[in-house]
Length: 114
Image 1: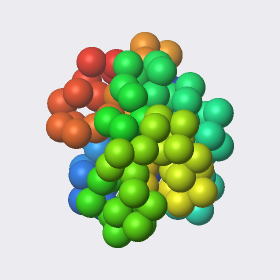
Image 2: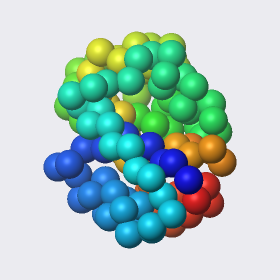
Image 3: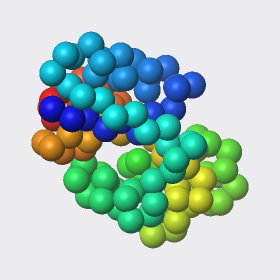
Image 4: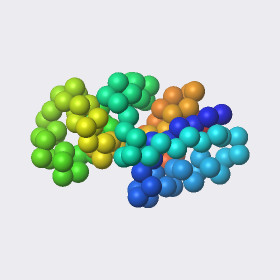
């Protein structure tokens, strides 16, 4: 099985999720450091649709840039545009397999797609 993780190595939850994936010998892990290689707006849309999440649910609301841009009351389109431009706004980690996409908060959610 292949699993792709959109990962931030400075995030403890993201590191925890990566360790869980790497500990499973049947999983081939692809790591995407999304701060260095951000997903496009179209890719974000696809990921959130597969996860059954709205862009607002995938937003790191506590980031200063989220407050500066007024994203608390923004439309999903505006949020997606902001995430594509400022990937720090993407809640992490996102994990994708053939079975779906999950936001790894809590990490147990990802087990649903493994």
